[in-house]
Amino acid sequence: MFDMVSGMFCFITMVISFLYGTRVCWMCGKDCSFHVDPFEKKQILKQRIPAGFVIYSFGFFVLFSFIFDGVLPIIVWSLTSALILSHFVVSMSMPGLKRNPSL
Figure 1 (cartoon, rainbow, N blue to C red):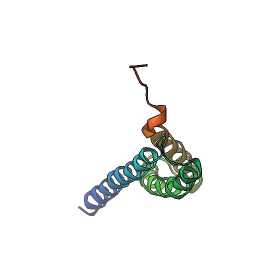
Figure 2 (cartoon, rainbow, N blue to C red):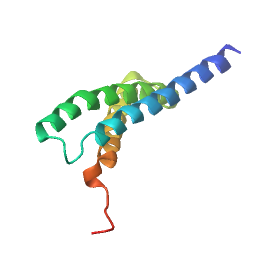
Figure 3 (cartoon, rainbow, N blue to C red):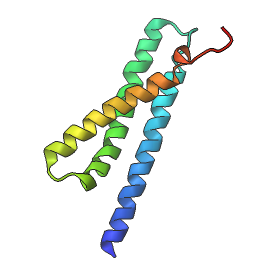
């Protein structure tokens, strides 16, 4: 019974972490539009990408603790996956990188 409840708690924590990390990174990319000054874009990216990275890494720590044994593989896989995913979500949500079929 305890294993089932703890598994449910970890799954919910992981899903919420991924949802909030996506929300933070998506809004970071959306705020970097063409009419924003490049200096301000750098400040937005410097402030919000680390926040998304930390939120994602927490979710990946929970996920990879079920998959791998040992501390080092969990840390390496979690940090690497969080870094790649946070930058991927930010880059996919930037308006300047979206395809414009009318041109």
